[in-house]
Length: 428
Image (cartoon, rainbow, N blue to C red; front, top):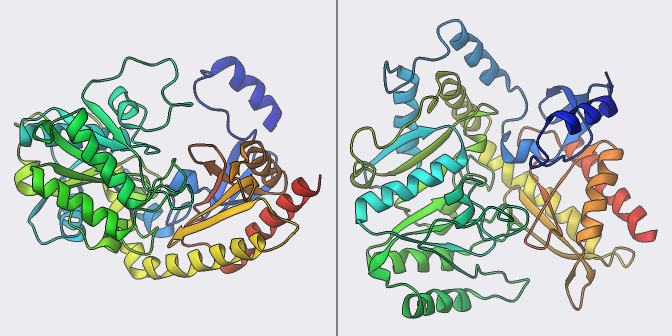
């Protein structure tokens, strides 16, 4: 079996709509390293798109899931419940920021968590409209796409989308969109397009994932909280990519000192097993009638058991603190690269904890996005043994989501590959 033979088989068997990514087929993985079917080793700076903050096959997670496999794999929580579902809900209720009593519901994907957050907000307020932000990403379902603020590739050919969804610009210091401008746009929206009394929720990412790792300042999140309080709007914070120690806090919104009404979670919650969660103020979470939330596989016993082990690992291994160290290490290296005359393509470096981005441009003065260079860097890095991800509205941002359990040596090895690859591409 070879990578190329699997590429050919994939092209014949798998929908074109599922992006091809790298022509690499993985055979096994451990912590922050993977090996393909041909035996080649790769350092993983993508972590399955932020799913593996605790690394591939964390021993605690594997032990817990193996034990659960010997008990049962599925019953459907809505039919015959089980303890790990309840225990995990209790832990998340205690972990999310704020003193208001909380309740939790589990699902399978991040998009489901987002959809159900909107359902809860509408049930609690009796209002239809939702406000989201340009550059935001909230999933590939019809409602998720409607909320998402990026057209290509997510919205092309799939409309019309659900109504009563509105977008305003997200603050972006590098692209010269200030917090004041974003808030003014929200105020204008309320005056020109939708009465705030009709708005059920505002949904916001503390750090935009797919949008380019644009960081919402504490000032901005606090202002959104104030707007929601003024108009009786539910504040939904999407922590699907930012959650579970990635930014140096268990949840990124903690940096702002804000208590959201609802928080969506997924990705690193269960260490590689499909699980998402919606945690929020108890009075809101109880607004839907019994049967209004749920799903056949929602809160799978394998996934909830894995998630309990993930939470233990984050605490025991102090991964919030580790994220800060990792983030400084990577961002400092990127900034040094950006100061070199031989690499004039590094336009901006930004991070919150270990959520690190390097924005590539063709010209630092005009800030013209270098999408082709970014794509080439991802491919070149893979040739040298590093799995790297890009993102951004203009497809010109390199994002690093290395497992928080990775060693300094492995991280430095990956950074060396990025630097060498970029040097080769720029010099060529």
